[in-house]
Amino acid sequence: MRILVVEDEIQLLESIAEGLRLSGYIVDTAENGADGEEMCYIQDYDLVILDINLPKMDGFQVLKRVREHNKKLNIILLTARSDVSDRVKGLDYGANDYVVKPFYFAELEARIRALLRRKAIQPEADLCCGPLRFDTAKRRAYVKDKELKLTKKELGILEYLLMNMGTHITQYEILEHVWGDEADSFSNTVRVHMVSLRKKLKQATGYNMIENTISKGYIIDENK
Amino acid sequence: MKISNHAANVRKTIVYKLVVAVMVIFLAMIGILYISINYYQHYAMSGLVDRLENELNKAEKSKDNGILILKQDEGISRTEFVIHTAIISLSVICLGAITFYIVISGVMKPLRQLTEKVSNIDIERASYEKNYILIENGGLEIKDLSRTLDRAFQEIYEGYERQKKFSINVAHEVRTPLAVLSAKIDVFKKKNTKGDREITEFVNSMEKNIAHLSDMVEGLMLLSGNQPVQKKMVHINELLDEIFFDMEDRALEKDLKLTMQGEDVIINTDDQILERALFNLIENGIKYSEKGGSIQACMKTVSDKAVIKISDEGVGISDEDKAHIFDLFYRVDQSRSRETGGHGIGLALVMHIVNRLGGTVSVKDNIPKGSVFEIILPIN
Image (cartoon, rainbow over all chains, first blue to last red):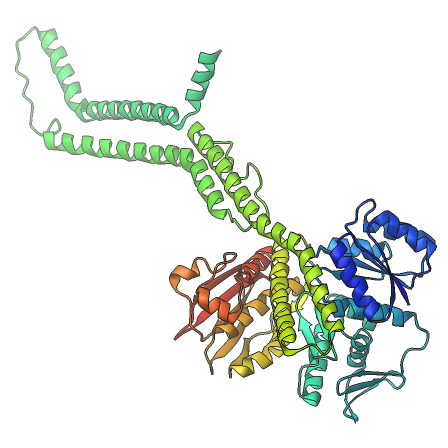
């Protein structure tokens, strides 16, 4: 897997590149928007990590121009702003995901994994996390081989969280992916199903598997 | 030109208006008094005067010298006269007082408006509208006062904003170095999976402090409040249900009971940021509680408002601290706060959020001990 990192803060650029290389990715780097754009045309990357504030050409511009030529390229935006408008703008321009600085490297990696997996044709049949096993074919969840009684929506939420293990998932994302068109954004639906799912999981495993960080979202992580 | 201008200005002052009003009313009072007493005199003496005229005419015709005898009850007595004039004077004075009252309260009306506007000013509000308290009708003095006040408020507001922006800007600038530090540590950990104990401890301590800083920065960024409020119908008890679940383990550590009371209140609000505010209050309650206490959330509706009370049985807050508890970076007790891991942002954020949602938050003493935080939010 080949990844391009475009970031003008050299120390951060080097750290990200080094960390990704340690995980076995082939990493190229660019320090400004213009170089980044050019490299996107020359090489066939699996994924691009793109900062928004860049010299010469900002991340939004790069994103817009690259998207005109390449619709399939996975692009993750790095933003120092927690502005919703910035994120919305990024996603509108065609970014696949975004990470807000400062971030945990593990979180960035989790997002990369999730994006690259989405691209893979065959998803794993079983998603595992600690004592929990999720059979995606039969759509059933087990804790230590004992089946958990979950509703359809709870299973959907759990599956989506497991597919994005190690990443914070917002209520909005869950609503989009689990509810889809039947989403009723005028109620606390996600929250209610989420609390019920978390209670069931806690009862079965004895600890709180799904963490909730307010304003960041829900996360399920193996290292907890 | 200048003189006429000056004269025009003088004519707009309250002093001028009042002097003119006093003169007019005073003259009117004297006039009324004079005329009515005169009229009374004339009326009371009319019988006597008629007789006097008749007798005089008769005397003139007969060319005789005559004696006119007046009976005492024919005219009015002195006491009667005094009483009557007193009544007339009193009623004229009453009339004058009422007129004065109407005139003066008319002149003072803009002043009352000004007082009301000033008392409505809230420093935490998103922005100060220029000329918000400017009063256009009314005397020159009030106009001047309102203009000066307006300018002063604007400056105070700008100063306050600058101060708040300063911390937000600092937070913004600190993000990139923090991201670098955090990434470097993560990568370092990845590389040194079997490092010795000292290094692991060092890295863990770095990590913990970076996480602490990141929390602070994030809190400050939320205070900048440039995100639009997204309202929808929210069941408050569902929000609390989630927060209680998140807090369950921490409450258990201190043997605290978390309870919910009251009706199911549904309000139109932004659930994401409200959850944050409620979370901060409940987290605070847990932090400052002693073992074995309880945290209670109580909800009710009062006309078109929802009232949410979060009460604890903890150490409580002194009256002096209550006035500042919602200030940014204010800490009740330095050593204690460090122990509990606060950084003086939590309650400032609560205040900011509740204000953005159009509500108010206040703190009172809980009986017999602890504190009650009360959030009042509009239902719609």
